Length: 263
Ligand code: HEC
Ligand code: HEC
Ligand code: HEC
Ligand code: HEC
Ligand code: HEC
Ligand code: HEC
Ligand code: HEC
Image 1 (cartoon, rainbow, N blue to C red):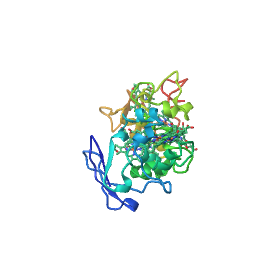
Image 2 (cartoon, protein in one colour):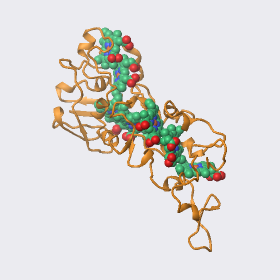
Image 3 (cartoon, rainbow, N blue to C red):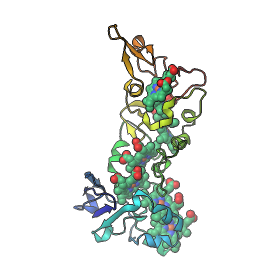
Image 4 (cartoon, protein in one colour):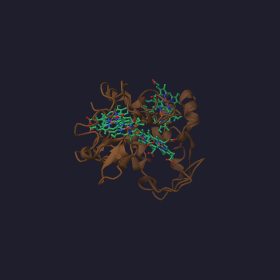
């Protein structure tokens, strides 16, 4: 099997049903593994034009997404896996039956339908601290819109939308505060790796480097290694734990009472 997207080209190793095939995606060559897609027994691929007859809106929206650029050649049985059927599985039985909810088509909500190509994501969701997608408590689509242009809902391009998808479930962290922490404007993902992380609370760093990447630590002149952060001598505090623990800046997401984000 060969999959190409107009912009890019990548080689993928294939295993399982698609053994021996190559997966081409991006200019940068990335090695990937493609796993066999979930299947509906007896169904065949019919291609996106057949879906358009009844799902005009989805097909229109979909044309501008990254996934619409994927194109598969070769392997007779997999022809047509581009487009809608890459996630929903072969659709002939569904189309022949005139469609219908739950009729001979995959919902796409199963993480496995994404992992067939994004196998590296499966590994991220296995890290010790992760969103409970593989446990079935939420889906990839909590944060990704599979059809729309803005597939990365939580990344967003418009100011104000950046943290919107996180706010659906984490209202407390995302709500406005009297004393805002400006770091929040850059988005939750400046501090959290939301697929998964080896660090508690899915933090990008487990120690003070999380904060020091924006708040410079300055050596005070004529002292023995004393350090200042934000024009204030922090030497004794840095020994007590992380910036956000030990009774220091515990209100990392912003505070209603303290400008220094103490509580
Ligand atoms: C003859 C019309 C028709 C064709 C062709 C058709 N569908 Fe559907 N499809 C429907 C109808 C009707 C529904 C039910 C809509 C609803 O109630 O939300 C549906 C529902 C779906 C659902 C939701 C299923 C669920 O369980 O919620 C998906 C996904 C879907 N179609 C994908 C496709 C894909 C992919 C194709 C092309 C391979 C396709 N459809 C072709 C009529 C069609
Ligand atoms: C990248 C994977 C992916 C592709 C490609 C894809 N879908 Fe979907 N689709 C999904 C997922 C996931 C859902 C479930 C959305 C949710 O969780 O609410 C879904 C839901 C649907 C539904 C149910 C109604 C809805 O919006 O929830 C229809 C109909 C549908 N898709 C049709 C299509 C058609 C037609 C295409 C091709 C133009 C397509 N899909 C391409 C992943 C995909
Ligand atoms: C047929 C293979 C395939 C399937 C199935 C698939 N993807 Fe993708 N996806 C790709 C390719 C190829 C890209 C292009 C970017 C790249 O090089 O990774 C991509 C890109 C993405 C991006 C980044 C888009 C951007 O522009 O930033 C997201 C997010 C994504 N996919 C999520 C999903 C989700 C969620 C599902 C399941 C509902 C899914 N994908 C199913 C192949 C696939
Ligand atoms: C809790 C929200 C959330 C969930 C759940 C989630 N993602 Fe993401 N995903 C994001 C965010 C935020 C980004 C952008 C990260 C960045 O740019 O640093 C992203 C980026 C991506 C990308 C493109 C960039 C990359 O890392 O390659 C892909 C592909 C992707 N996600 C696939 C998936 C798949 C597959 C699932 C389900 C198994 C999933 N995501 C579940 C929030 C989520
Ligand atoms: C659909 C709901 C949903 C969305 C959307 C969502 N999360 Fe979560 N989040 C959860 C659930 C469920 C957990 C696991 C809580 C548990 O295990 O008790 C979680 C856990 C977390 C944790 C770890 C909490 C802890 O105490 O260890 C962080 C941090 C987090 N999410 C950040 C984010 C960010 C950032 C986003 C947006 C990119 C996001 N979440 C989007 C539902 C969601
Ligand atoms: C400046 C870095 C930073 C940003 C930006 C950030 N967080 Fe956090 N977040 C943290 C730290 C540090 C913790 C751990 C606090 C602790 O140890 O109790 C945390 C903890 C959490 C938790 C676990 C519960 C709690 O409050 O301790 C959730 C859920 C969470 N963050 C969600 C979010 C969401 C949603 C956003 C965006 C709206 C976000 N975070 C933005 C640093 C950040
Ligand atoms: C993405 C960059 C960024 C990250 C990461 C970041 N901050 Fe900030 N923070 C800012 C900006 C910008 C301001 C506002 C300007 C200033 O006061 O330096 C600010 C302000 C603050 C303030 C208020 C300053 C005062 O007057 O007392 C505190 C306290 C603070 N941050 C603590 C933290 C802690 C703790 C962490 C790590 C959990 C952290 N910051 C991570 C960018 C960041």
